[in-house]
Image (cartoon, rainbow, N blue to C red; front, side, top):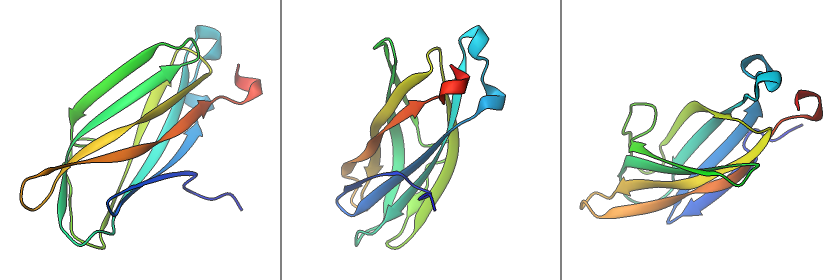
Length: 132
């Protein structure tokens, strides 16, 4: 059985897990458009409450072009995670090449307001051979 979350990174007790899937129905290879959906689960296994404030993504396509995406929260939310809690969300990424990758970090605030940079694991974006 395929593991749901293929990629994970842990920073100071905060685990970020990612599952990624190619979406052929949202892609148009003949028009140079490929689309992936990714599911992120953030688990707070630390001993303090944290709040996700911002995200930073580094998206690289097969040509080596890098796109940096910064924004507040995730999909319009800035979730607060108490110890033992988790937060899931789903988003998508279009590319103009059939292969690429994503990685990055979230900025959290600790209870005392201090920032905490939490790694988002590197994960590949790869269209199947029949979608190239």
